Image (cartoon, rainbow, N blue to C red; front, side, top):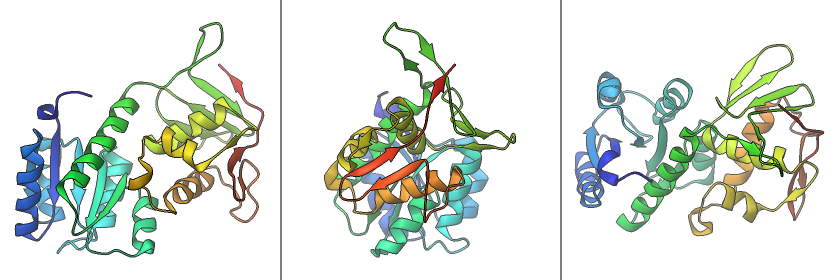
Length: 246
């Protein structure tokens, strides 16, 4: 991972005292940080500051933090971590469903925040390099075909046979790369956590389920009877498809 000094962190938080404590903590570990009190103030400076990662409170004065996360994910592909006093599981699930890379509840220890920042940035940097699959002879593949879908590892896209294309997040591509590399094979939750570079202590029970649910939605799966990504209860998940490569 590149030097922390090269990483810019945006703190979008309306509580100035909390934001200042976060800024001091983040900068003490070598990151560059800027505080924005509202979503609008952040959006004005977004393309100038160009953060590598955003720490976003949900209860902003001018906009729901979830809407800002969706914008960052859909338009800019900028990583985000929710920092919120809301500790309910439903808030965490919705946050991940909207595209957040992680969720940390206030109050939190500085060491935990820095560990999560580093994990997300490490995952982001892996995603900035086009993913490839190598066969046993060293040949590289950038596209995989299964069912009615094409997945392009070079630009993180999923395209249906009807021409409709859907972008994949970093975490979604990591999971799909694992699935298409081992179709019809069982993957445990711990294997998926390892693939996502998430420490088990940082994970909450439904985080994997949420990401799988997002993938199923993008694959137009029936959530009650998915045919591609199957849940093997008590064991993990299996990607059931014939995969070819180009």
